[in-house]
Length: 415
Image 1 (cartoon, helix red, strand yellow):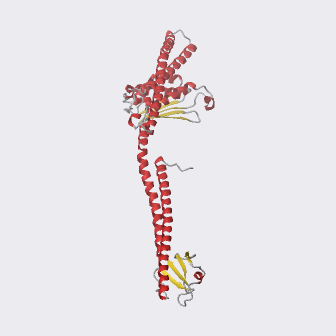
Image 2 (spheres, rainbow, N blue to C red):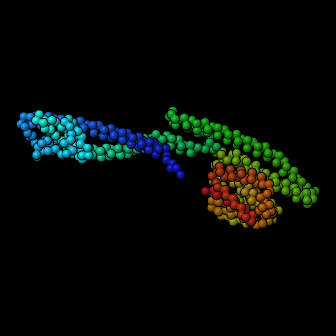
Image 3 (tube, rainbow, N blue to C red):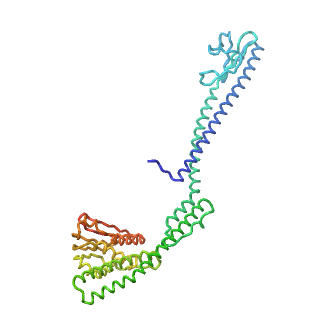
């Protein structure tokens, strides 16, 4: 896997590479000029010493000295100052750089008037030591320059990307669907980061416009559907109360009534989904969640009896939830409908504990798991999808578990 670096680290690495290149170039240039300077100094010293020795030899017929701290002098034909074999082959002139010598040495050859040759050798041992020290100092300078460039790059990158980080933090907490579009560009300079902030502002406006249209359509559609639904439900109740329907027709009418109740739950979910972001909806609070669950079970007792469901309710009293009762009624009502939609017998178990509600159907369903998977569950999926969206709006988690034997359970966690 390729290593991924942050923008700040990449800038620091770029500065470090730049510092390495610049420091290395300066070091190489310094070494080059240092070597050229040492060579010129060596040639000048050798020339001056050679002129001095030639004058002394011409004046006194001998050499004032043969060795000193930096110079060695040889004279051809001399018993005690004969030149080494590698120098004896040198022709008059110079200066010559003696190959293979360590420390570095330079030699000059001068032909005297009596047919002899004077050899002057300059020993640059001390200069070589200084040159090696200088090389080590330059290596340390390159390393220090690279580290300094990386550190300066890290600091500069932190300052440069600070507006980007500030913009990222502000974008992270944006919720146009809840609080509307919040302008960002006003808090940034008119530069590249400001242009990015303006792009986010434009995107917020588009997103918020889409949310407003979706919310208005959902609210209008649910309101429009409630009127004909109320008419249908009223007509069903009149027929049931008339006492003129046979057992078969009454069964069908009660099935239609359950269908209208399920559709009512779906419409309530649509309304909550459309209005769950409004300030007045968020200000509500449910003081006792278990009492709300008991009320829902009492309202749906007849429907549970028709499905031959045994209800088992286990709850803890006085569990408060920071949400309006209407929102919780819609969500829990849809979950009860979803978990019992295809049930025929068994146990409906509702557990209310701190921070969570569990609704489960245990027992043999009306159809086997394979047959149940083939049923048209479009209405079930629609209602459950809206419930999930409402839970997401309120920051709750909805978990669904379906066992191999057909047992179906939902767990809604408020934390």
